[in-house]
Image (tube, rainbow, N blue to C red; front, side, top):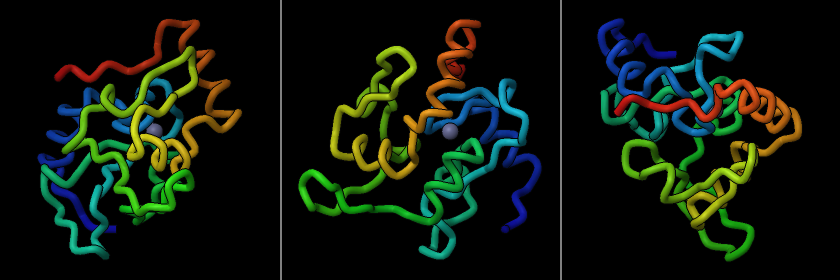
Length: 140
Ligand SMILES: [Zn+2]
């Protein structure tokens, strides 16, 4: 894993309001440290730069891996994943209770690949919603 300068790391975390930029979980509600994720993976020549980094919970990061453009099961087309630097979350997803619903093909491949609605993740979000702690609200 590439070393990320502590100042850069802090700026990325501040921009995200300490939220996972994919599933909107807060770092404060998660037992393990969130990752600073390369949106375009280093193996695809993604840079360690402010515009290519985001905050990701370990679940989203592990499921995403270095993928960029999965095949959309519905259309059979190659579709780019949701990119927190290029897309607005609410344009691609919406919450129905704790379930993250898709609004676009980008949303569909992301919901599927990152397994947003796995039963244990849904249970966790329902619980956090009852406490008024989900979704995490980035300051920006
Ligand atoms: Zn996440």
